[in-house]
Amino acid sequence: MFSQLKQPVIDNLEAYQVDFERGFLPKEDPLERLPDQFEIIENIATNLSALLITGQYRHVIDKVQFPDISQLETERQIKRAFLLMSIFGNAYVWGGEIPATVIPHSLAIPLCKLANILDRPPIVAFSSMVLDNWRRIDKTQPIELDNIAPLQLFLGGIDEYWFYATAIVIEAKGAPALISLVQAQKFVNLDNTALVSMHLQKIVAVIARMQAIFKEITNKCDPYIFYHRVRPFVGSWQEPGVIYQGVSDTPQMFVGGSAAQSSLLQSLDAGLGIKHDREKHESYLRQIRVYMPVAHRRFLEALEMGPSIREFVLNNQENYPMLRQHYNECVQAIEHFRKQHMEIAVHYITKQAPQHKQGTGSTNFAHFLRKVKQQTTAHLIS
Image (cartoon, rainbow, N blue to C red; front, side, top):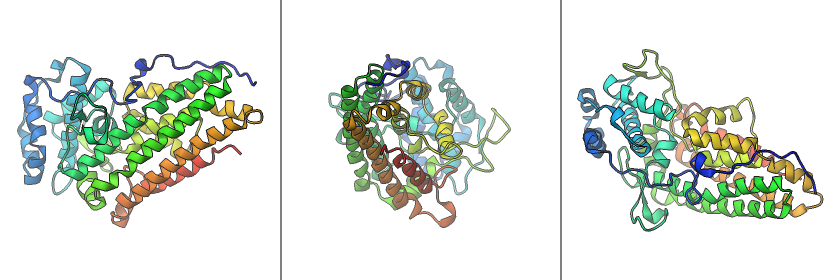
């Protein structure tokens, strides 16, 4: 049996804010309401849809005086406040007839303070809109599509609701794959081909459950409504950028909210040794890690530095052909998930967009997903 130099393994998932049952979703349900002294924030959140629809939103934000965010006492309070304030920022930029290029100081200053505390950019991202934006309808039941609701939306409605609900449940369904990646690395160090193989099989089954949830998005989220009513509010700050008044006079440019910012698929890549074009696609995937929670970034780094599952398979494939088969099944499962993501992106973005506006953030999203899918397939071991 092949023996390789032992690499450090992840031995404390809590240190990376990874939960055994929920994965990257928080172990404790997100806070549903801030303390009373932050009532003005909650009031705006409650009326956000009405304010946007009636065109009153920017007028309200221009006049409001937000409370001192230093009064927030817990991480759950900080995450709740950042969720709402980042939504307020995006709503301010995109919630008028023409995009705003300046976020007023009354909003920009507390938003940037919260972003600095969490070490994330001051814009809506996957980490806030999905990981920190849900409640269980029945607190005694698990996270499932029939028991989950987003806490905050922009315009609201079933399409926006369902879009975020499916993303939340996919994260929960992916949790066992994270556990199996960590366990597989441990068994690589122990030269245990049988148990590495077992965890690879578990990962395949998990990805299948993720795909099943992903398919559900088409049931209650219409592509036209998604593109024209949901997607605009999570857009990027592109040229000429956005000024955060009272923070900096230099316009800032940030990537908009995207499923590419999820740590889940990047973890599968990291754990299974799937690498992408370093100059383009891998560079972009690494750049958007800044939009992830800090602990999750460290988890990705720890997986990358851990024992190489791929090298273990390559060095044992002749004596243990089933190990190679199970590794390839993992790669194929990830490729199929990315193919499904690409098809949905084409249906929901490319086909809905005028030719000059295709893409998400600074990328042509469908083209990006196609290339990443192809690079995944290239990691099959023959």
